[in-house]
Image 1 (cartoon, rainbow, N blue to C red):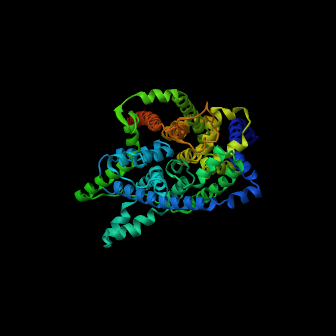
Image 2: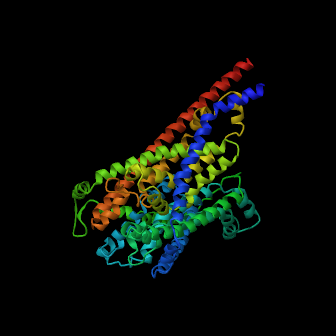
Image 3: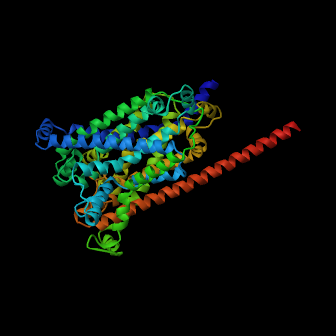
Length: 557
């Protein structure tokens, strides 16, 4: 009788938790699965035939594959080299270097393309001042811009993996007489194989589905995402766009499944001894030079924006002026700023709550079928390119009351970026003792109470990182929201192609700088909040240790 009564009380306490879990599952099915299914069901045989028999289709597919493959190899290779250089040398202020290498992530991909046009275009800075013509428009510009855009993502993946290398293996190899080059080939590369696969798949998907860089630097070389964008936005050819969207989702889905398999079958390692870096002045000097040159190349678009944003008229009059700011305000800068901040803040707040709760519902519950479905839905958005998701929303939700408001942008951004914050929370919550729920149930504590009183205070740093991820990506995204905006809801990132079409180059530079500044401010606030939370946690821990020591002294007495 007592057992049945206890089970009844437990079910009553956990009823709100179960209701919220099923509500979240329904939400993800509606906002992630339904639009994509609807997109596929709108495609007819005639649509497929029309796209595949079009004269420009196969050249566009070839352009996409060639530029993506070259950019992926160069971006991943360069990111690996820089991460290796930073981790295997005694370069000072490594944390600062890491932050600087991630600055290009804080501006839209279209800004990288625009920055290259400002530097190397027909009327670019290097072309005007030094007569340097690199034939930017075409393969060269797409590949260069794609590298700038994707490099920070691959770099962070490699840099993080290098932190977990075990030095004891290298010590054993040195004792056995294995030289450094052979150690690199036989130990370093195999240990990084899973990360290399993940980086290649992530960068390939990013570049293959991006239209921002090719739109700015492609010239007459058109890629599939640009074709899809122009067909839908310019020609209102939704059926043709749906076919191209289905093509774009295939490599992303394959990459997602391959990465999932790699992560589930890869061997995990435990670090017993951190990597020991020997003193070598020559190596460190070369490392400083290599890192500095790489950083300059990566930040060139930002430098170009800073130079051109406040000139009177490029390239005629280089005198300093705030006239461009006034002109931007007349072009709707204020409205774009409000829209971007509203979308980013709402996306970050709601998205963090939903993704954290999703991770909690899955990690801290029994592995039932609803939980597995929720887990799959939470991960699936990683396999859906933003440009495809945006088009699917335009076809699935057109006509609903919120379609012409910023709320549809918030919903599509949450769906687009859901997977990464979810995985952050998933990994953090997996580290807690698996018996906590049993203890809580014994004490009559419900799951929602356990969430708010135990897990959330203990994972403040993770929650801040999740919020920051949503905010930054919502500020810079162009793909997921391109098909859903109107004059009143246009964010800052999509003002860039509009201003470029008006030949207002100085305006595009200022908007890119503004997006960068807002993201840097958010990152700074997140850093301060995390530092405060960590300091508070250390203080509480110290107090707890003192109280424990006092208790032990009293017990001894």
